Image (cartoon, rainbow, N blue to C red; front, side, top):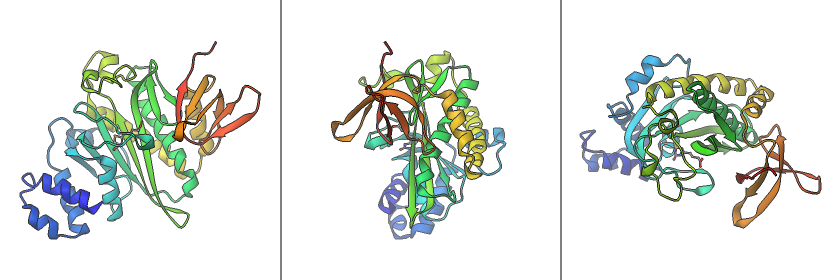
Amino acid sequence: MKKKMQKLLSENEEKISQNSESIFKIGDKEISTTIKELGRKKTERIIVDEIEKKLDTEYIGQEIYCFQEVDSTNNVAKFLAESGTNEGTIIIAETQTKGKGSRGKKWESPLGGIWLSIILRPDISPSKAPLITLATGVAVTNVLRNLGVDARIKWPNDILINDKKVSGILTEANAKFNTVDYVIVGIGIDSNLNIENLPSRIQPGSTSLKKELKTDIDESQVIANFLHEFEKIYNLFKEEKFDDILYYWRSLAHTIGNNVEIQQTLGKKIKGYAVGINRKGALILEKHDGTLIKVISGECIVQDND
Ligand code: BTN
C-alpha cells in the first residue's frame, strides 16, 4: 500500500512541487500529510469548495480530498485510514486507473463519474459489515430517486434504473481480533458519464443519470445530498437499528419477489425465488422444491417471472 501511495505521489510530483527522491524518503505520516495537501488542490470537474458550501452534515465529509486521478479511491482511503485519519473523511477522484468492483472485478472509472470512498470506524463486530453496504445502497438510491429517476437496489450492491446499472458499492473492512479497525465504503455513480466511454461489453447493461434525465448533473449537489443521506442511515447503523435499515432496503429492492440466479465463484449457480433478506444482509431464496436457502454473496441475475 505504501508503495502505491508513493507511486501516486511521485506521479503527481509536479503538482505538489516536490521531487520524487524526497517523496521516497518520507514516512507514512508525511505521505499521508502530502496526500491530503494534494487532495486539497483544485480539481477541474469536481470542486470540493462547492460540495462544502452545500454540505450540512455533522461528521461525514468534514474532511474531503479530491484528486484528478488515483488508482482507486478505496486504496487511498485505506492508506489514510491506516495512518489514523478521522471517521467520515471522503476521498474523491475524477478518474481511477484501477477502480475496484465487487468480486475482484475492474470498475471502469472514466471522466464523468463520481468515484468516492468514505472512511468509517464503527464499533461493531465484523459480521455486521455487510449491513453497511445495504445502508449505503439505501442512501444512494434515495438521492437518485430525489432527482426524479426510478432507482432500485439489486442485491447486494447494485443500483439500477430501468434494469440498467447506474451505481455500485464496494465495502472493504479491516478487522483485528473480531473488532473492526476501519471500514472503507466505495461508491461509484455514473453521473455525467457518456456510456460510449465504457467498454462495449458493459454498455448495454449500464446507464448514467445524465442519460436518464437528459440533462447535465450537478455533481457537487449529488455528493452533498449523498453525504447527508449517508450520515442519517449510518447513524441508524451505529445505534444498531438494523431492522430500520432492512425495512428501508426492502422498500427499495428490485430483487425481492423475482426469480433470480446467483452466480458464485468457480461457476456455481443457484436458482430460486427471492423472498427476502435476513438481518445479516443474506439473500433468502425459495428453491423449486420449496426449501429456503440463504446466500451470502454472488452476482444476482434477475430472471423473467413467467
Ligand atoms: C461494484 O458494483 O462492482 C462495486 C463498484 C464500486 C466502485 C467504487 S468507485 C469508488 C471506489 N473505488 C474503487 O476502486 N471502487 C469503488
